[in-house]
Length: 116
Image (cartoon, rainbow, N blue to C red; front, top):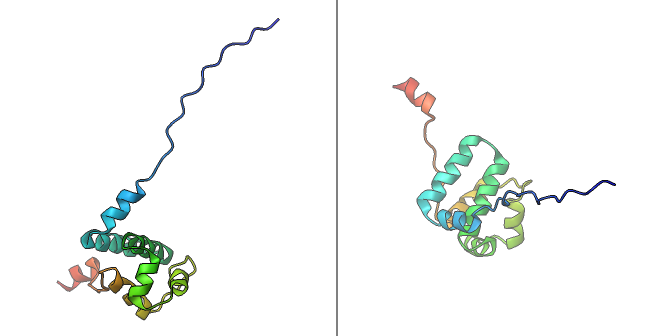
């Protein structure tokens, strides 16, 4: 007769819980939000930019609040910031303006060094 060994339960790693509330609080600071958007732009992924704008919008009262500030409908704003969204420049500047940010352009580092 085979005896059963008592198995100890395996210690499981704690589930990874992102600090979303802390992240959204951090994004409330305009300097942090601008740095975040800038970093996402440098990655060059349009979907990443739309997600970043959704995160900033959420930190500033949510999409409904931003829709009111921009004059866009809530549905249009959700559509614009979706993964398949393709915002027009006017929508993008309105969204950024409603979150306390603005669009700017600067020379890329490589081009700036060549010109000097």
